[in-house]
Structures are given as structure tokens and as C-alpha cells.
Length: 488
Image: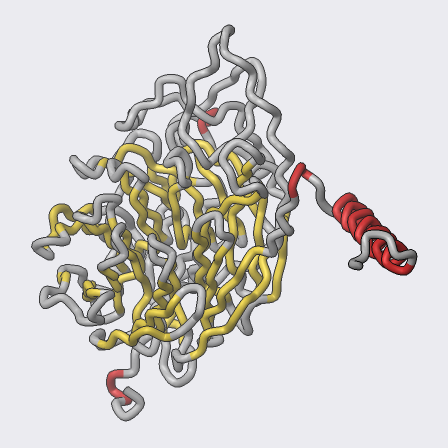
């Protein structure tokens, strides 16, 4: 590819702030957002050549205000008072109340769905052990791409890593060994985004060549049919939980829902008035979330294509990436004002804001993870959720979802960290960035100790056992010297 300058791939991620205006195309499809005209910046696609350059496109961003002043998004430090709704249904109602005031606040949990409360006759559960955060440490650096790495994903089975780059290639690595298994070549420009099918057999890739390709990860070959329909760079893709549908977001401001088997568009959603930066499926596949440089996050009904909810923060910063929480009740959104926000999309409220990283130019992705439960068995230890994100200064930050505390901050890459992904309670994580590398991270696990003994208590117990063993050896030596217990 080095010999064909005319086909130099574009950096597939991502955007930059620009203040030039041009007419907007779409209005909000639900009553929670009403348009108003004022000038706000947009974010633009990141391109690549031998030298990094950022494309400049001109878009007007439309600002949206809630119909009721009391329904405006919460302030940055607002904490939600209730996490689950009692009568939450799959299909959201646009008229759902956005404020609930229960008697006492409850903590946010992203890990499990709502469970029925125990009856009076039920035995009280044992108190879980306090969750302790165990930091991640870099295990190895994977090199091979010759331009910036725009996205990295761990397969659902946890045995492979896929990375894509502005060099127009996809590389599949073994996890946890880091061995390069195969290189996939077929796109004519840089690649922005990747998605694994639920069975880890198929990998989807979205490129600046305006196409989506499906790859057989066993053979390394591309499927014959390409998914064609977008008119500009493809920024984000995601498989449905069953693997039969794919959703894509593009610079052409549209969201497409694809039938994977036929490679045809099932539905086109006139989603936004700026490039679509992120898309994702909820855990049961009934909802889709999308975000864009117009500052909007929209929730869509997969079956009908109806926009069920529009989320917009009062700062109206461009939204570059979104992700549903593991339990499907919340949306995590990355914005170009150096904030990551957690939204309760049923109530239309921003409930948490995480800060500390730098993010004003590029689309940066992240993930959820779990810490605690040191015993590795359900119910023996408390589990808590964390959010992790890259930063434009080369760092990775981990936040506690509930307290917003920065659990860990690590210098990870030279230049912007574009992608982060986590997998399972084994404590594995991967990251990628503009320095052309993929890095594997592993949680520092504490040694497993019986009877709940650890730390200083473990050292004292080992010393006691060592002293007992020395006493036994000395006693045997003395008995042997005195002729006791010896042979005839």
C-alpha cells in the first residue's frame, strides 16, 4: 500500500471543532426537544496521510431545549435519586416523567437487572465483602500497524483481539498471548470502526471507502457481499445481540439498520443534522442509541424506527461516542468538552458526569468494567462498576460509576488514546492510539487466601507456619542425636 499514494487511507477517527455554519437538515422527531437557532461548533472526521491532517467540513449544529424548563438536564454534580423505574417497559414513552423523588436515594448499579425484594420470611443475605479496586498494569505492546490505530475490540469469547487502522488493514491477535493470527486486507481507505458478532465467527468493519465488510475470522476471508448505501465515511457500527442485524452511523448524518444475511438496508433513520459519531444496541436488541456532532443522543425503536427519546445536555457539546450500560438501563456518552456523561434515558436525565481526561478534538471511545468480588464466586464479594476512557494526552482513566472517583490514571500511549475495550472478570483490557500500537492490560490480582486472610495477616500466618516447621525440624534433629526414634 506504500506504493500507491493515490490510495492513501484516511484516518478514520475523528473530529475537530469548527465554528462555520451551514443549513441544518433535520429537526427533533419527539416533543422532548424543540429547535432553536444559534451557532455552535461541530466536530469533524479525522483523516490520515503520511502526515496527520484533519478534514474540514461545514455544518450548522442545532441546539435543542426541553419543552419544560424544569425538564432540563441535571447539573454536573446531580446524583439520581432512583436507579430503576418500577414500571419500566421495553418501549419507552416520550412522555415519561424525567424526575422522580423517592423517600431515600438508592445507589446506581449497572451490572444486573432489577430483582424482586425479599419477603419477610426470607433469610437476610450475608453482608458482601467490601469491593477493593485492583489496578490494571500494561502486559504487552502489539506492533504491526503502520498508521494510527482507530479502534480495538475483544471478541465475545475473549480469545482474540481485532484492531483496525488508518493503514486500511485489520489485524487479529491472540489473547492473551498477543500473537498475530492474521491480517485482513480489502478496504480501499482507512478503517474507523469494528464490531464482533456474538459468536465471534464474524467481524464487521466500517471504512472511509463508504463500505462495510464482513469477515470470516476463522479463514480470514471477506464475505462476497459488501454493505453499501452510505454516502460518506462510516464512523461506527454494532451487531445486534442475535447477530442478525447491524447498525451503522456515518458522516452522511444517517443511521442505517442492516440485514446481515442479505446485506441490505432494512431501515434508514434520518437521525441527525451532523455526522453520526456512535451507535449501539441495547442488550435485548429492542433499542438503538445514536449520537452526533449536533449534540443530540437519540434512542430508537428497532422494530419501528421511531425516535423514542432525544437527550441533550444544556452545554450542547458535540457527542462523539455512546454505549449502553451492561444492564441496558443507561447510556454512557463521550462529548468534546472533556466530559463523559451517564444518562438515564428513560427519565431523560444526566445522572453522572466524569471528568479528568482531555477530549476536545478526537472521537474517543471507552467501556464499562467490573471490579471487586475478589473471591471470584458469585455472592462472596461485592462487585462495583467502573467506566474507562482514553484521553488526548495519552492517558487512560478509570472512574467509579457511583462515586465518580478517579480509581486509576495511567500514561498509556504516545499521543491520543482512541479506543479502549474490556472483557470479563479475568481483568483484561486493550487500548489503541495514534502511536500505531495496541496494548494489552491485565488487572493485578491479589493472591487468593483461605479464610479471608490477606495482607499483613497473611504474612503473620506464613511466619507462624515457618516457625512451626523449623521447630519440628530442630526437634527431629535433637531426637536423632539422642538416639530417639532412630533405626537399630
